[in-house]
Length: 266
Ligand SMILES: C[S@@+](CC[C@H](N)C(=O)[O-])C[C@H]1O[C@@H](n2cnc3c(N)ncnc32)[C@H](O)[C@@H]1O
Image 1 (cartoon, rainbow, N blue to C red):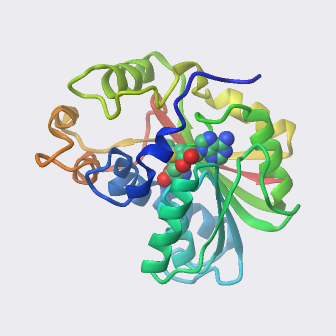
Image 2 (image 1 turned 30 degrees about the vertical axis):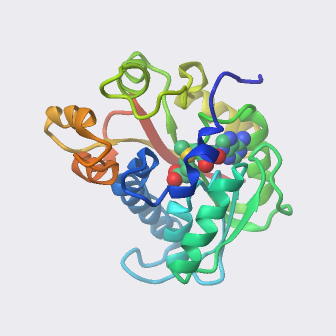
């Protein structure tokens, strides 16, 4: 099924400043990246028998599908992975390359799509696709390509948005449509493109990726008024990076808005 209506060009229009805390894209950095990476690293430790606390993954290969500004690519590179990041937005790829150079990290970024990954077969120990599956035009092709790129036994990490009544309210109405609280004045998300966990599991199954686990990803801040910070966010009042830290994203029980997890290539 081909899915349309989303404005993915936003990653070219504002993608030169992913790392700027005032860029709404920086919401993904403040606490979402540390939150999801902590979970991925815990799973990595459990699945590989390596010491979660410290031992590194030097020499292992990781593929970042839809690498954006390189938030997660830099995390995986820091624990020793040789990371290849793939993204269709040349502006984002350029920003990610510049930031990796400043961080003194060797990450290879390529322009391409998840539907047609510019990588050889069975090269990667780990592949991950975070906040991307709800943006792609052909989910089936992206998962098929991911499975092709993974070595047998390789790990696939994901996070994406669930298609529920709650996500329609929070992610579409509050974060995208309501003038006072929206991040962008453009459809960065289309609710019908959100992926229910059961849908993802069956696509993965078709391509030899066996589900390990799905958990919720969301704000851990107990203060519901934190959502009101969305009104203050942007400009000089409150940066999006700070808003993200205040919301304290990470593993939660509810999968109603967003969820993350892993699968294993057979
Ligand atoms: C919300 S951002 C997530 C970026 C990054 N994965 C992260 O979590 O920080 C979505 C990214 O998906 C990319 N993207 C859009 N369509 C894609 C596709 N068909 N294949 C791969 N990446 C895509 C966009 O260019 C953008 O960088």
